[in-house]
Length: 190
Image (tube, rainbow, N blue to C red):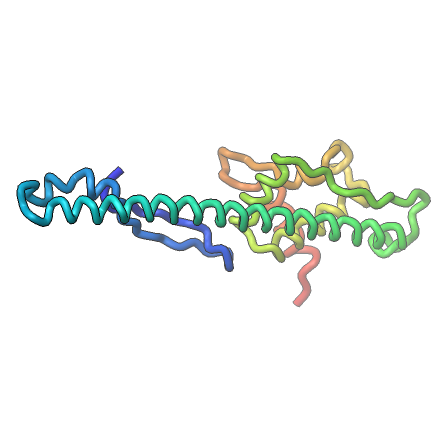
C-alpha cells in the first residue's frame, strides 16, 4: 500500500457512492527516513507525530467500518421486513380476489419469507445497488406472479432466494432486473 489511498464507499444516506482519498500515516512514518534526514532535530518529533496519527487512524477506521457494517445490516433487516410486509399484503389481495378478479378456491396462508445469513448478505448487496422503492416494485410483480401460479414460478421453492439470484458473469441481480422491467411495463401508468 502507498502513502495515499483511494477508496470508493457507499453513502449511508442515499444510493450514491463517494470517492475518498486517505493518507496512510503508518506508511508515511515507515518512509520518513526517505523524506527527512534522520539526524535532524525534527526527525524524532515527526516520527512520534506520525505514529500517534497512525494509531488514531486505525482506531477511527475500525470504528467507521463497524458503523458502516451496522448501517448495512440494519438496512438489510429493514428491507427484509418491507419485503415480508409486501408479500403479506399481496397474499391478502390474492385471497380477496383483487389480483385475479375472482376469489380463489384455496386461499394462501400468510407466512414469513425464509431468512438466513445468505439472504441478509444478498439484501445488503442489493440495497447498495438499488433504492428501496425499486426493489419493492420489482418484488411486488414477482409476488403477484408467484401467487397467481404463473408457469415460470411453479418450480420456485424459496421466493426470496429466487428474487436475490445474482449472476456473477453479468454482475447483476437478474431476477430483480427482470421484474423491474415488468413493473415498468405492466404496473406503471402515466
